Amino acid sequence: MDWCQSGNKLTCFFQNDVIGVIGITGEPDVVTPFGEIIRKMTELLISENFYAEQFDWQSRATEAFVFDLIQGREWDTQFLNNADLLSINLTIPRIVAIIDFGSMDSPVTRDGWYTLLNWFRDHENDVPLRWRNERIVVLFASDGNKQEGQLKHRLHQFLLFIKNHIGTEAYVGVGQSVLPQDLQISYHQAERALKTTRNENPIVFDGELRLEMIFEEIKQETKIEFMNRTIGPALHDSELVHTIKELIRQNQSLKNTAESLHIHINTLHYRIKKFEELTGYHPGNLENLVTIYLALRFLDENTKINC
Image (tube, rainbow, N blue to C red; front, side, top):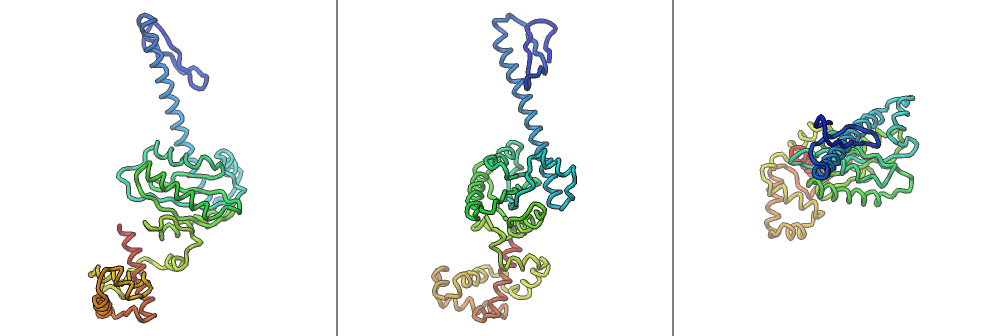
């Protein structure tokens, strides 16, 4: 980086090695301060570029390694050497968490990814990584004494951090603690839990799931067909659907439902009767109620998918 054939020259260093020379002409007392500024800026830019490239390499290498780990790749010598190179401990149980960003106006920048992933630096055995452009996967170290409440508290803090730094909502599915060899189990559990998250419940642990375990095994086409066969005739009336949802949420209490919807109880009776006329199902019948409940759950799930 020699700017002139003669004159004052300033040497640039990076990690104690000479990387170039900046030349600048003029009276030394006048140009030296400007030359120092240029030298420092040059060293800073080179340093930032170096560490940015290191971060990109680390991110890509970690993502590839974890992908292989989840896919059940054989733990050969090369695989174990990569684990050592990336400082990933393969002797401790792990909990997989998948953090999915909500809708974003623009992609996360490199600096944004660095800031987000660096949030986990205080726990050296945790492995955070970028997963495509809209997710973070974290392999949390599980020592057997880690309480679910403690992990949920950390994740709530991280969601607030995401909201403050990139301005988007995020949702988290968390698998159960497994040995590293069984990491794919925890990963798939986290995926299953993530599908059940909502605005009012953005963090879901797989161990909390009950009916959702069954829902996961049902094809989406079957869910839609079931929904259309049962409550389909009432779907055009959003007020009616909302009323039945609220009735179920209020444990079929007519009084509480009417108060919650701010309607007269006679109006509620009218809506329930209209729903029965359209669908053939009355929420007062247990078998009918179960059918309605499942159809409404599938409706919510399908609405979330299409959003």
